[in-house]
Length: 119
Image (cartoon, rainbow, N blue to C red):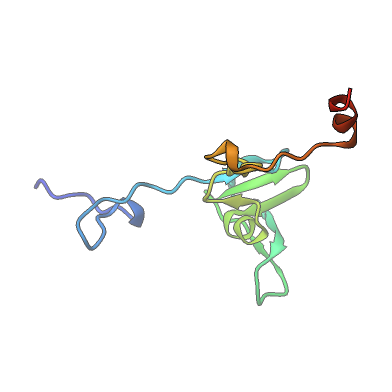
């Protein structure tokens, strides 16, 4: 009676070592897109063709898709296109490494600096 309900989300299930993995987060970095849910029986198609197919596939009832103007793209095609990612944007790389010993850093003078020191 106290059985765990059957969940279809594999990321919430315990891994083989017994730990529960956190759910994946998705990121969208291209502006202008919004999410939609396909409702009803009207025929709507994904804007992209799946690999190995020469036709546009239908969006199914209840399917979540990305939309921009007249484009509608399913999650699988959005992932293949690089529209969504599972990694956040990284901070920019550091510009230069800071030397630990400032005495060891050679001092370079510009020609304008050389004129000032000769006065």
